[in-house]
Structure formats: C-alpha cells, structure tokens
Image 1 (cartoon, helix red, strand yellow):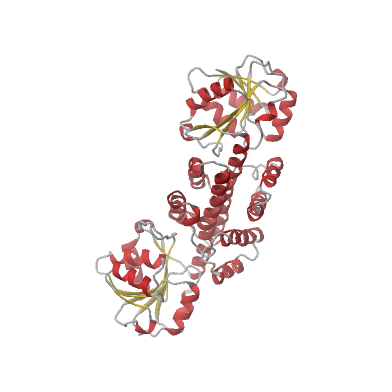
Image 2 (spheres, chains in turn green, red):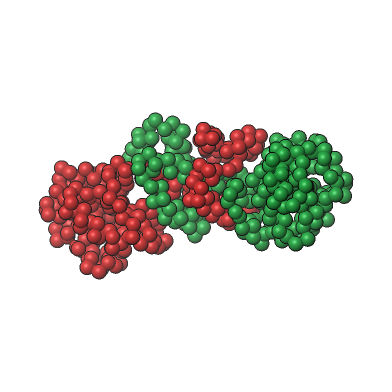
Length: 255
Length: 255
C-alpha cells in the first residue's frame, strides 16, 4: 500500500514511522506547512516532502491526514483527490462524514494513545479504532491496522467521540492532577518519586476493583475536618484549590 | 514490642496484620467502637478485643491509634496512659503535637498508600513517614518501621501534611477522573479496559518525562474547537462538565 501523509506532528511521526516498518507499505510523500518538520519526518521514512498542499501527487493508495482539527477542515476544502483513493484522518473528535461530500472512499483511524516526541511506543499494544465509508475501505484499512496493532475495533463516529473525551479524563486530566501533586511535593522539599508506589497501586486498583470501589480518602469518607484543613492549606493556589473542591464534590455525589 | 491498637478500619487492618508478622512483635489488644470490627481484626492477630476505651490495658509498649481524625481528637482527650509508653497515630493531616500535653513519648507513623478491604498490600514497598517527640521514640519506631518497609523517612508534621494533600491529588483525584472516564465508556457501549494501554503509558510518561512535559491533548494545545465540542457533549453531566472546564483551565495556565 502506497501512503502519503499530511501532517508531521506527534501523531503523524509515531504513526508514519510505524507504518513504514510494515512490509509492502511505502510512504511516498510527507506534507506539512512547516517545511523543516516535513523534511525531518520524510527523511526517517525515505519519502519526498513539501510544504505545499497543491504539490500532493496523486500516486498514493491512502492519504493519511494527521493534523489539528482546525487544519483538517481547511485541508478537506482544498484537497483534490481521485475517487479511487482512500482518504483517512486520525482525529478523535471529527466525524468521518467530514469527507462525505468530496470523497467516495474514506475513513478514520484513531489510535488511542498519548504521543510525545522522544518517547517510543509499542504499536502492538495501541488500540486502533476504525470508522469507514464502505466495506471495501473497511477491508483495506482493517488489513493495514491489524499489521500495526493486535487490538483493532470498528466503531461509529459517535463512539469514537465519546472515547476521545474518556481519554482526555483518563490521560490528560489524570496527568494534570499528578502535576498538582508533583508541584506540592516540590514546594515542600519532598521527592515526588515517593508517590510511585501509591500511584501504581491506584492504577492497579482501578483495574482490579473498578474506580468506584477503589476510591478512598477524605472525600470518599466525607471527612469535612480533613477537607477543610486541606482547603486552608491551599489558600493562595487558586485553581488547585477550586480543583480540590470540585473533585471532592464529584466524589461526594457518588457515595 | 507489645502493641495495642485503637481502630479496626482499612488502615488498622492492613497495618496490624502486617505488624503481627514481624518476629518479636505481639498485638495485645484491639479496641474499636464497633465490637464486631474489633473482634474480626483481633481474631486475625490472636489479640484480645473490646469496644470500650476504658478497658485498654496498660501492658503495651506502643499504642497505635488508627481512627478517623475526629475520633482521634476525642480519644486523646479520654486516654490515660503511663508516661513510659509510646502513643502513635497514623493520620496524614493531624500534627504529632496533638499528643504533646498529655504524653511524653509520641509519634506519627504515616503509610503513604491507599488501603481497601480485600486488596492485599506488599508492605516492603509502602513508604513510611515518621515524626516523633524525641530521639528515644524515633529510634524505637524507626526500628519497627524498617522491619515493615524498605522505605522509611523521618519528616516534619508540615511535610506530612503536604504529602497527604499531594496523595489526595495523585491517588483519590486521579481515581476520580478515571471514574468519569469509565462512566463515559459505559454509557457509550465501550469497554473501559480499552483505555488500559493509554493509562499505563500516561503513568509511565509521568515518571520518565515529568507530568509537565508529558502532557498532551486539547487543553495542552489550547485547541478550543475540540474543547468546545467536548463541553457540548458533556451538557447534562453538570459536575463532569465543570471538571472538564476547570482542569482545562489548570492545564492552560501552565503552558
């Protein structure tokens, strides 16, 4: 399968370098508004590169669009692609229907993972979620996806949207509360690494007991004496304090 | 060391059964307002039990108080203990000084972990934090703590208080956002288990990169298009939606 790619950010870089390793798959062209990003990724996969969308060559089988959501909408407006080609984006919160007016064969390939530069990923473990326009496209994208990951599922646009929001809570928001925790440790000359066994056990309990039964702490016990002491300590840390109050309220509503 | 215990909840149960396994340590008496809880724990460690504080026998070396913070304050008021004995509580957010007026030798032994019934813990990996009234007490409690855990540190009351709040964010609040995530998955016929690789990678990145560099997602990118779509989806889930807004604001303030 011959693949061209629009985008050269974290998702594009991780996905394209992984696709390039599959036998029978060739990356032809990398297109990014930032020419140096396009070049850097293209060199890793021995592809051509350009920063002009008009220079996209029509010799691919699959066009992958891995850009920000705003850029994606623009690009769809400008793209001119033969009807036989498959066009596919990777965004959690954009419907596959964004392609419906202009293209015949299209889909979404959504990798449920957090990607950062300089942090490699084992793609066999990344769940991939597919939504496609038709059976032919589903078959071709399923074949490609299954060479990448051992966990591929076909879902609807609505399910992917919900999954993206669920991922924001479980990944970005969990990371954010750990950031508050780290900053509190640093301010008080405590090594944040001391919390590693606690965080490991927290995640372990989520899978063994489910988050509802796993919950402990002052909010779960409605221990207002402790909660009020903590809120007093957090005076002067406005957003962190509001967060403490709101998550405590969320937990309190559940028991 | 002869130990008597007040309290029979999660912390008391996990700690006392672990202490009972140390050679040279005997649990004498378990006291809890709930007689059946006292009996249940006492039977596991072959100790006596009672639900009346006045029946506490003075034959112990160490009295451990593992109760709610409110109960602890009451108990300290009522306790009558010879000056040679060590009195110790396990609460993160109560100063060791609560004992200062009534007792000569006292301390706090704070285990940084989340304890639930029916979920066993490897105590070698639980960080234990000590605060004590004097060198003699520190020496005796350090000796005991080191037999339990490979990670024991002496800290101040103020540090333990900050550590407790940091633990609430990293454990209870991380668990809470995972609960939102799980509920979103269930409402949309998605298996929450699909998020396991994402959550594992999130935690792995926290330790490898630190939470600030590890952050990804719409809030980190200030992607208001996606954020507004998610907020629209969350209409009707009041607290979850407020949480989405507030954590997005917290992340936005950091980049």
